[in-house]
Image (spheres, helix red, strand yellow):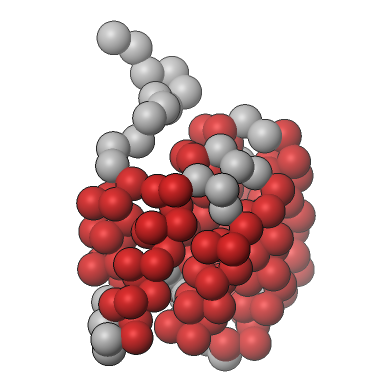
Length: 150
């Protein structure tokens, strides 16, 4: 995955084939179920979503993200998905969060989605505020990165 990381910063319209390759790698990473790799793959989706471009360029990315909420009930994996979701344009972000709230059985994830949706309804637009809400609602990460030692 590290080799593909620089490619996640490329605008979709400039490199559509690379974009499709990245989505396939993310899809395969999600299927493996490894928590650290899952979160790392979610970060790729967030980077793709934060790039300037036409909103319909993000259709495949949003679809993958939305379906992934129902494929895992792991708190940290879903947290990574939420962190990616708040990078999308607001309308798309809200739709993803609605689906996340319905699909998740993790109370902290449901509360986080609700809080961000409330902020969006109240006129908030900054992803940094949404990320802070996720941190405040979900709490600190409960896993350690691969290779971390005491």
